[in-house]
Length: 483
Image 1 (tube, helix red, strand yellow):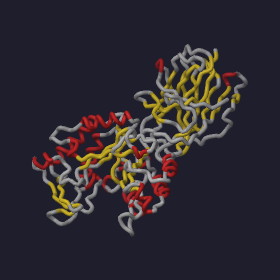
Image 2 (cartoon, rainbow, N blue to C red; image 1 turned 135 degrees about the vertical axis):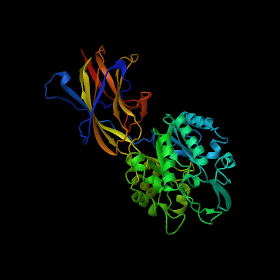
Image 3 (cartoon, rainbow, N blue to C red; image 1 turned 30 degrees about the vertical axis):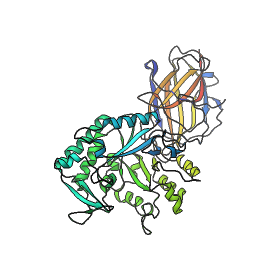
Image 4 (cartoon, helix red, strand yellow; image 1 turned 180 degrees about the vertical axis):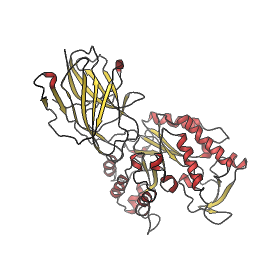
């Protein structure tokens, strides 16, 4: 018997789906085994056990992977065919609200639409300072009397608002809330990168010199930082959120508030200093200092390359070591700023992408070989997540049953209430059940498995197993419906 793989989705005819989940180690057996139960030799007492074949193909699954940067997969020439399900963008406040109250929703709407066309989802950050311009908040904010600080950075003068000024809070918090009202929970929105404070929204003002004190521009108080983070968190309750690892206050909230974290300098092995670098002297230490070592279990970890991979190659830094470091941090996202990929590194990237984020394999599936219309069918499935992080979205296990000799018939689909959200790396077993609809015609029926979006009830996540049809279902086996 050849193992084939598919997926049941939608709950047709209002028939119940059931689950009874438990965790166990996967068993190994002949994938073509058909064994009689202890009940005897009746056909309906036999069980089919299938072991789908694992594949090493690269593919893009939602909520993870190699991000494009200010580009989409359909216009990023440096992507070179690498799968990408996420597009990352950053904006200065002045760009998205040029006039008081006139938020440029059209910009976000078009980006979300383009992401959908490109088979991606959108991630973004809003910033208040960091460009080469004098001011990165809207000019009208300063004209209305918002207090601020003039400072020098990179040989130029800049101005940043005083985050404690009630006018700043009134206007900036309005922006946050309005964006949340319009975009939180949108299916094309992937990730919110909480910015607002610091150069480039990175929660630091390193290298700045305030004109009035000659010292670095101070950050807001810890209480005010908490307030700003809370505004973003409340405005986007349904969206995955990350905060820069440099924010002590933010990192201390990660596990409690379900925040992930982001680091903008993956790969720094000594580019700023001969005695200090981000990889050896900051990231792991910051996780320990703030108690955020296990934040990855509840929310994503995202990295951006320091400079880009060309710098790594030029400096002779060990690219495999850099990628392994990201995997040890349980990374879900990485972006290389949509920069060119150095020659000879493609194989290392592909190896890395096979472990980045989540990657789900079905090891075994067991079910009755013979059923009758109206019977409840029990399925035992052993899965393994061979990635380094869990899925963070609520995709559901589903099944599809279709008569193999009837291409025109409507298949029966069942979406269970078993979600893959939070499936940590390693093995687990799910015991599921669905009822064969009354009136189902006798004959051989193909059994397919899928991981579906509960809103659309269509396959959303690809499994790393052989056999997948054009609709995204994995045909895994077959069931004989008898009279």
